[in-house]
Length: 243
Ligand code: APR
Image 1 (tube, rainbow, N blue to C red):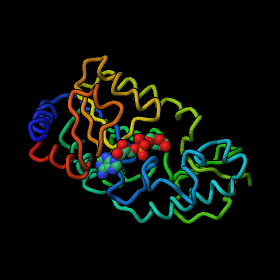
Image 2: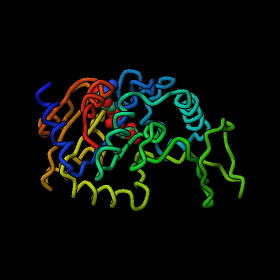
Image 3: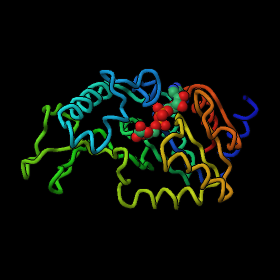
């Protein structure tokens, strides 16, 4: 693997345009539960069964209990060396973009600024009725109400079956289509459209790299597959990058 790491480092050092996609695995070492690992269950519910509009419509109290639990848990988590390495990568590579599927806010906390949070943020809440939307890291009531109209608030995240935030997908596609290096980190590649981003990058001539604890369904299609902890591999990739 060391030879592959050196080759990827050489690519990163060549002034090329780099787009990185991250998933839950990048935050695993911060203590944030991944979605599909063994630690993913909450009170015997699968997150996929709660993070959906029909679950919220049927039982908003349960869905809010889940999100308030996640907010409390993740509020105590700190960025790890993988987040820090990506913030560092941005400082070395002028043409850089980080696209994350994570809603935990840890990339921004680590200092990433060229960042798209394509599934929204746990720290954003919005009204189910009016246009009220705000960032709020404070503890919320069990059923938080909109201060403007009194209707129920909802987490500002994109749920299964919901479209992405307007414009986000277009920007992601445009950026990935012009990337010269595409790196996917800590994602099981089970959820679209992110799972197909590598294909888009590849179709436009990018070198594709996977950094993940274990092989995924995309591994065989990547030019480089670096398997291990993101918190070990990413710092190695940025060590010695020139300004
Ligand atoms: N370093 C690198 N990879 C890791 C680490 C680690 N320390 N720990 C776990 N992983 C890998 C796992 O092996 C797995 O392949 O991270 C991946 C996490 O996969 P998922 O839990 O499926 O998360 P993700 O791909 O981000 O899910 C996508 O689905 O549930 C929705 O909206 C939610 O954003 C989420 C999306």
